[in-house]
Amino acid sequence: MPWGPDVETNLAISSANHLKVRFIQQSRNQCNNKIKNIIMLKPVIINIKKLSDLCLEFTI
Image 1 (cartoon, rainbow, N blue to C red):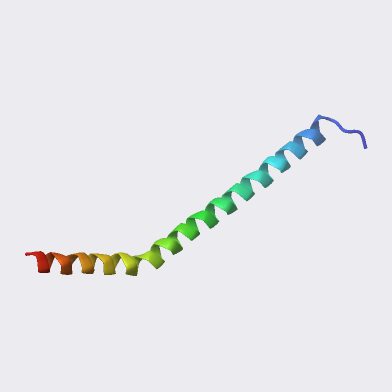
Image 2 (image 1 turned 120 degrees about the horizontal axis):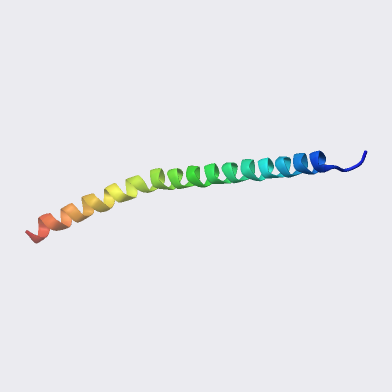
């Protein structure tokens, strides 16, 4: 089967779609990781706020 413009165009489109899917998957994973990190840090942030409030009580 000879290679023509249609075959090359289809290969280019297929390759571009594959890269787009990979980019979306990686972006989604990065967002999920950031969300997980924020959720895990929330108790730490709350404890730091409580500690800072406690320190304010002692300095007043």
